[in-house]
Amino acid sequence: MSTATITSKIAKLQSLITVANLLSALEKTVKAAVLPLTGIVMFLFLWQATASNIVTSLGQFPGPGDVWNQSKILIEEHHAEREKADAFYVRQEVRNAKKLAKNPDAKVKIRPYTGKATYFDQIFTSLYTVAFGFLIATLIAIPLGIACGLSEKVYSAVNPIIQTFKPVSPLAWLPLVTMVVSALYVSDDPYFEKAFLTSAFTVALCCLWPTVVNTIVGVASIDRDLIDVSRVLRLSWPVYIKTIVIPSAIPLIFTGLRLSLATGWMVLIAAEMLAQNPGLGKFIWDEFQNGSSSSLGRIMVAVITIGIIGFILDRLMLALQKRVSWDKQAIFR
Amino acid sequence: MQKNYLEISQVGIEFPTEAEPFRALQNVNLSIQQGEFISLIGHSGCGKSTVLNIIAGLYQATEGGIILEGREVDEPGPDRAVVFQNHALLPWLTVYQNVELAVKCVFKKTKTKAEIREWIEHNLKLVHMDHAMHKRPGEISGGMKQRVGIARCLAMQPKVLLMDEPFGALDALTRAHLQDSLMEIQHRLGNTVVMITHDVDEAVLLSDRIVMMTNGPAASIGEVLDINLQRPRDRLSLAEDPAFNAYRQQVLRFLYEKQKNPAAKPKQVESASKSEPKTDKVSAPEAA
Ligand SMILES: Nc1ncnc2c1ncn2[C@@H]1O[C@H](COP(=O)(O)OP(=O)(O)OP(=O)(O)O)[C@@H](O)[C@H]1O
Ligand SMILES: [Mg+2]
Image (tube, rainbow over all chains, first blue to last red; front, side, top):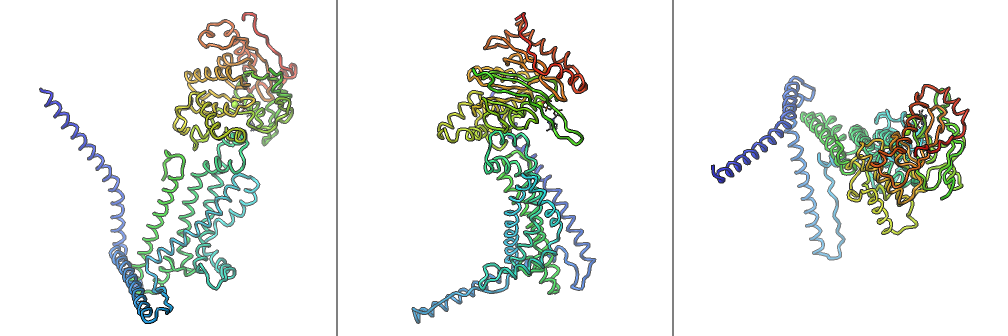
């Protein structure tokens, strides 16, 4: 055998190996995708089978097909509404241009479009509201958790309050929050809608606790050796908190934040229904009151949207945790 | 050299427990000179770490106290640096940053930025860790972590270096390496060191004096053994040195004959500490 044939054989072998590698990678992806897909398909079948057996006063319970159609309609409605808005602004501009042509000193103004909120506007409102409530909760929960974790005395003082308020349902808070917001937030030109504030505060009150509790546990379980190091070095409080307390507590703080965000998102829908904040909760409520034949399908679209957004929010927090975490080898799930 | 540089005076400690307070130490007395290398040896649970933590100020003695350079010390501080058994490095900081944290605490006012940087690098070189300065503790071996822990303490230029089984978690080979490094550094810098160990060879090799503790509860110092071996010491030639072996024998005899049954004989210990409340010094054997 000449060297040439040997080299060509080796080359062939190598290409075979590459192909084999590619195949095994493909197999892995397929395997990873097969089970979830099977689950989804089976669920859709079950759903369809069950739905066709349930007849409500608003007609047949929507199956996957109806929901698909309704979601397309919602998207179309959104586009239609946007076009109307654009047309409205174009009309105004034309009118203003004419006015100015006649009289250059004329006062012109553009009035905002006040059409009905589309499904996507409502999603955006919900996201904005939950973000606001979650932010307030975080700003209170982390410092409070750190204080309780560091000091036995603060913990003993605050713990009964935490334990009492932790299990309270958002629906119980809502009337109180509504009245307080109406009483205290009085302004002629309010920057925030009252319904928005009511919903956000209710969210904050309910999603405070997981972060507080987890931060306390995280801070209280700092390695004793590290505490001793800080004592030997006589670290000042700010340095101690920044270099030792927060880094050691960060995994549990994030566990808490993720639980909080999930809770907040759940609570938000209920709060919006009752407070009439123009988000997904109000959408569901309005559809329910509407009671048309498409209502159930549209509500089902909202249900799925809420689920998917909740899932995405959790993944976003996870991504943030990965970025912030010092331990790049840690497994996050 | 200053006599009585560090003085442990009549130290006793009781730990509060659910039933009755647990007396861990009683009548511990020791004076240490500047530049001396002291080893604390004794059975597990006798109270070695407790003694070290009291010197460090991490525990408060119930009776007696610690006097360093003529002043009582009762809180932790950077003048008594501690090398912990499990390195106690901050896992989220790099090797360099770990040492930096300590250096900044001590020298923030007296050194410029450039000097601080140089000083950190100098100390990491001393323990041969300058090649891994920007790694995290999770990315280096156990022996390397322990070296960084030592560098962190050396960089603080403490009056006393306290080490709690610094090499306990390491394999024999790494341990020998680090013992040699420590000996060399201590010889060069003249640090005052108090080290806890379970390893008789290590104690004899490194120390100027070995302090042997009786079993708890109410543990105290049983015997103190002066090690008069020439420095610098070389482990290979010492292995065949009769004096070295005689010292080893004495420590072993103390541990396995005089104090052989840890925990079970509180009565005997009590009578022992009553009959000899002061440390009885064992002079170097004639064979040396
Ligand atoms: N914080 C504490 N509270 C109660 N008892 C303690 C405390 N710390 C130590 N002890 C007790 O004091 C005794 C001495 O403990 P210490 O840790 O000093 O032993 P040691 O000699 O260092 O042992 P080892 O060689 O295993 O590290 C033990 O009986 C231990 O149970
Ligand atoms: Mg110990």
